[in-house]
Length: 242
Image (cartoon, rainbow, N blue to C red; front, side, top):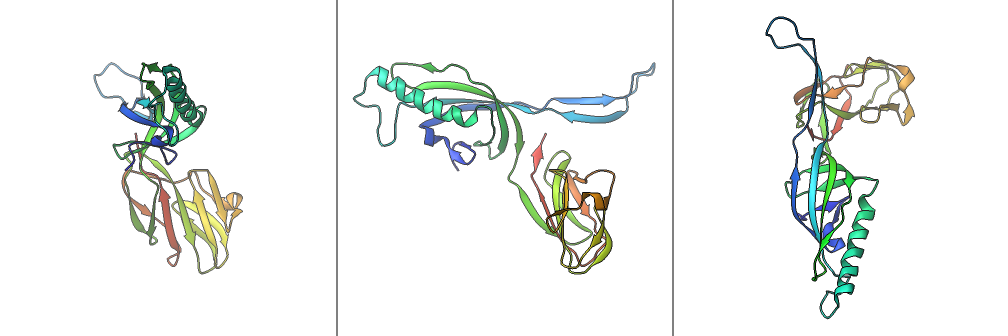
């Protein structure tokens, strides 16, 4: 595995390597009932989770494609390392990026600071970047029968995409508490909780449905319900870790 990648690109492409990194824990905000005169645990209404803080210390080397820093002066070495650093920062400034670290996890990340570099006469630049980040694994896709189970690897509630294929026509079908009306034979219905979309054969089906809220996966086993027994179901989600 590459030492570190940004959007699938190894940081070696920028003549850099990571020296160390740290990943913070997750801040939890609990919404609870008011305290009373009794010493009891308040009722928990819901909890919200904040992003982690990811810090990565990197060294940028005074190299260019096909050339190292031998027989070059200090100004040239500094220029080369700075150029590599600028190329890297152009990738992360003002953009949400996907970072893969040696711990095997991906981090959806947004840069919070671009500090000045520390450098010496070798021309090497050391920089520590700070990101807001969400830890996750690669996207997973599983095939399940109506009423079958999906084991969600996340440790928190997770949005998912449910794709259902129907060989028969139906007046309506209920998929994970979402009632979808008027389904023709051969239809493919997609309930996309990630993007808030419901389609049938690629056409917006939102107004032809009845539901309270988009379904989500809970950590552990989840039953994927469907009132059409012949339907072929596919669940796609990204395991996330609060």
